[in-house]
Image: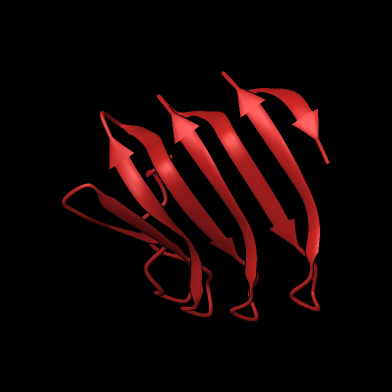
Length: 93
């Protein structure tokens, strides 16, 4: 997951500071951010479009989707909500 350190243009692909992992698009904008514990995504993560807009907010437990997830459309309106348990979809609104 952290194998790619830089894009071909020299832009850093990710940055790990303590337990905070941040991914970047090749243009340098924020792609995703959240906790990274024991080599796995953990807790709340936020994902962004290349334009900088918030796209998704979701939760992980031991690297698997666990808990609520929401996705926003390009007009910043709620597109849908989902709930996962151990990486399996259990509820969709």
